[in-house]
Length: 289
Image (cartoon, one colour):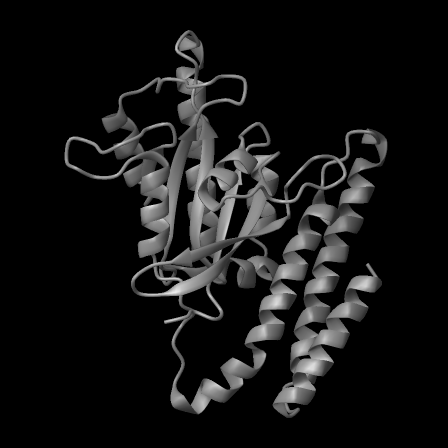
């Protein structure tokens, strides 16, 4: 079975996490960087083939520079469709080198705060209705080949489980004492066994759902890409920060409203005409950014 319009996977972590390396190890290629070298806001693709289905999972990538700001942006009504489109989260955080004992509590607090923020935005957008995969992946810092966990695996597993996440040590290999896959193999296994199919529709709604699938997916992807460019932190002009941030948020909210209007305007059109209309409208929208 081919899943034509799968749900999305969001990979998110602090800027110092090697998200690019993790994605390369999982998919075979690195995500595209922008001019500054950042991958925040980029979209990658993961081709999956299992005995049960084949699909290309769109990976949305984000970096959490300021956790409170990130949570606030993802908690807005305009972000609801982004959250609802997700079938999985991979939250990444750095492990600590063996000699960095003073950082143990800091790293654990950071991991916990990130998981709570993700819990919060999912609850805000979907309540208890969201179903999907949530992984908390501990990674070695880019400056360290392999770092040891500063807490016992059991403690981290319990911490993550309390918030609906599965803990995975990205550096682990082979199988654990229970014969279960570890590390990257466990991430792949979790992704492959997750349900990436979009919500089922009734026969009455099938034509409508199918007709909007392509343009809705494209619209969501384009708007996701805009998020990074509009909300990026700019340290070169601190005095203009508050004014610039207000303008950027207004721009993003305006784009979301225009995207909704595009869909509403094409609702009564025949399928092919609707697709042409949506494609042109999205193109015009992007040109005016």
